[in-house]
Image (cartoon, rainbow, N blue to C red):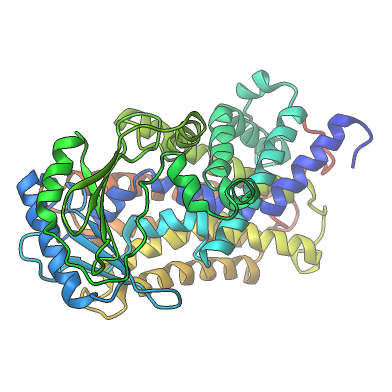
Length: 517
């Protein structure tokens, strides 16, 4: 560490950013894509007709079809979840839980007939969304890892602000050079340009899972009864314990009509608890109102009689409203088209900030005049992880899209095969960083990513009248063009060293101890 406070902060910023930088880049990339999760899912299910609106009577009839299917195929389940069709997902989605240790059930139905939907099996944008905070790991492990990285990200942001005393000057300073100073300028510009977004998205990301990271307050105050906390804070309706005697579930169609007449919001799903018990409960959960607060109005019914038991419509306590506002800021469900574009672009700047920081760390510690074969193991490891992350993750996403179009539609286990293509592509690019000379590894990796993204619209094709598909293809082509330009610029720039092979990023000849200013 340095002798002065600012030097100490520079040391802390560099090492804290490196330790979690590779995971943070994955979190930023998939989180940025999640702003268009619904649109990605639409592109990955081209068979469906999107934009259809469902009236109250159609919603009621669809809900009855869902209950009929669940009675036949999941009669012993403790909880049924019926996600009703909506313009961005015109299918009836059923999910059920049978008990601890037993696998849940899931099926997509045609809303008009109640038969299994003839649609390709895919997790669509939901995979990228969940990867953003679970890393495709068991949920508890994934969320803890992402939370730890987010905490270190806050440390890196604060130490970076202290280190860069000339924030305003850095905002207007960018030198197009392939040396350490050029990478430092790129890191400064991308970091400062969206600095409020970076701080907000990191902090609110931690707040969304605060009860997981710090559960002791709720456990102490409510003596382990977390459900009572959620009831008193206004987040859920009052649960009803089972009676232990058999009961008959009343028709859910009239309940849907009643709920829609009480809450002027789109109905998102029905949750049916203990459907065969005399004390069954049906809860109609609505989409959040247009605003910052991420709250879901709810109407609870006595399942056996169909009578309204409780209505929750915005009656949140101040602390809970603050929490839901933080969640709303993070997920940006309130954002219109223009604001969502701004969130997306800020997310891309976050990706660039992390990527340039990783490259800058490697460039700043470049051993001069040393052949790649003699590169220290630590530098080789950082270089391989940089290539495998900065180029590998975007390539993995492109492979995920390509697999969606190239795999047979009726292939068993198709959704898992798409995810395997995602991780397989990631590993392939990571191996480039391990097996090729560093300069060549970057060129080949960036060119590979560019080719993959340029192929996506070709294999995907354009749907007739598919505005979302056209916009998706344009964005993908733009990403491919950006990676292609980066590969071309790197390949066409002559090396300043005697050997054509570089230790990391080419032309990195500035002294590694250049002070950050």
